[in-house]
Image (cartoon, rainbow, N blue to C red; front, side):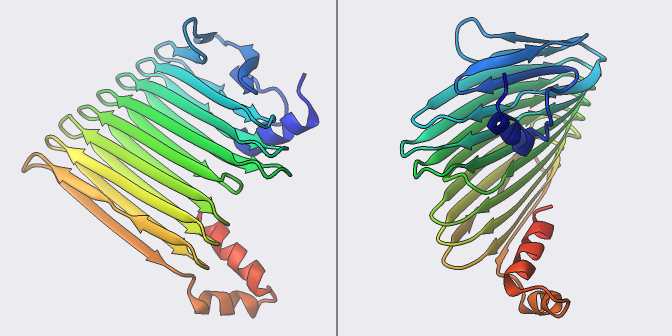
Length: 305
């Protein structure tokens, strides 16, 4: 039975308003509490470690929800998920984790996802992280995504961290085969003394493989952020890295994009910008009747969309 708090957390991280249609697995406080498979989409618990296997048959279209919520203090949860997207399938996979920490001890979730997008398939993957709670205990989220994009397949990753996560280390590794395409969009906001690190390694291992990595972040208070995306082309691959950050107050942002070509036929580009909110933007919105704080929030919301 889902409580009112559970439902509120699921809406935050997975846009769920009740039990979803189709295949889903809901994990709460270290165990699966709701699970359902659907025609052509099987979700089954692992036998040797915590986590699930998601098996999508070739040619299937559909949506899969696999959110995690933590509502207990002092809990450390680690989960291993394996996701197989069959050839020519078209899947929207909505993950995400929310922590409501009511106490003074640490609450932590480490989620490891191994995903294979088979030949000609399409995967749109959404992962949102969120933290809240009246206690002083830290809220820690460390996601790791290991992705294979096979020939002529397409994967789109949307990785979002909104307010309330005290510490995060995000590791993303991807291999893209011939004709495969990867698009990765990361959005992050930190405040107070929060810390965030994102390490990304994408290997273009096949001819005509492509990748686009876009990171947008806002650092407020005394928070610290580190971004280190690396794009490697072993042959005739094309890729682009774009890192844009807004820095405010006493925050610290470090951005280290790297491109690495192992072939004369590779085409790789990277760019990075770190800057504050332009004064003219604030003034323009304030002349429309917004306070300075409201104007800042409007600009940040638009930047992170």
